[in-house]
Image (cartoon, rainbow over all chains, first blue to last red; front, side, top):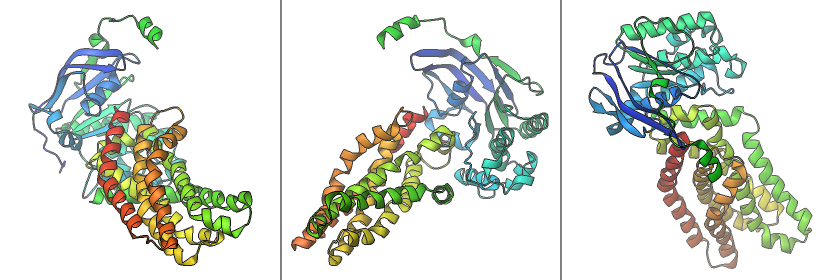
Length: 226
Length: 221
């Protein structure tokens, strides 16, 4: 029914460090996410929430440490890890020239889904009325809904959401919270980077600033060097 | 296989719907060639002599001109991240995108080349050779172009940078493409040139996607 095995061990991040350019963003970061779990990432702008999500998605290699799933490091099977996660970044990956339903079925195709639940996904985010519109007619909030509808169209056990409520109206936010609750009830897990207080039952919270490394090199040296 | 076809289809849809994508490259190709008789003068002998080279150079430049729509839009709107997360390996993504790029640039250029060849007074018996050369050579333009387009993602003036990177790589295609027609006209035969063009395409087909995918991974990181 859900389309994925709900109980295949924990998602574990162990001793992660991430460097962007010359700057160490976070270090010694560890967390565990069991099936059905939710993890809220909070922290100031630039504290590394998005980078952590990209590391968890294997889009970005951590400088140190590793992410594992059910005890197996995800770096040993990156395509397998990609297949079990949905990543909704702060960019919507929507082409103005494609239709709403077209966009959704395209991304379902890209995940190799045989029978994507496109209609259910459109209904869940109240997009069914514009299913045949070209995406260039959509507002920012509607584009966000379309990006989130990908989560429903093809089930995957891990959702990585970067500021999912940005430009969503209260109705959209309620729909997202409901989708997350259903996903977790089915054993799915979700990691959300957010500034908005989201109403999620027993979510663990990870504050990125707790893992900010001590200022290492004075940044001035860098500017001199370049 | 569904994913490859899905991506190929999406690329074609985008090229056709975002009006002018195909027309732009074609229009440039035609205009650049038409400028030559005006600039060089209408002497048939000179035009016939330089015609094949002009057509090939214009095809190279038209291909370069269309490179910025290969990966840059997907990079800026976040689609590239999702393509990297898809079930297709990135190399496969590159192959599907290059195939669609070729269908929307190399193929139409080849299709209208007979008219331009006639305009330049190229011997009509040599036109099939010219078309065969374009058909075999233009896939290389898309494949090598993809490497440059991927390497320059995130650069400040990607268009200029990628043309500087890729035009030297296009040299063999230009030499053998123009050489095929010259060989045919001179009577020494077009076959070796066409075979070399085909060999270039066959070599680029597996190698260029590997290099391009590596460059894309850098851009995503």
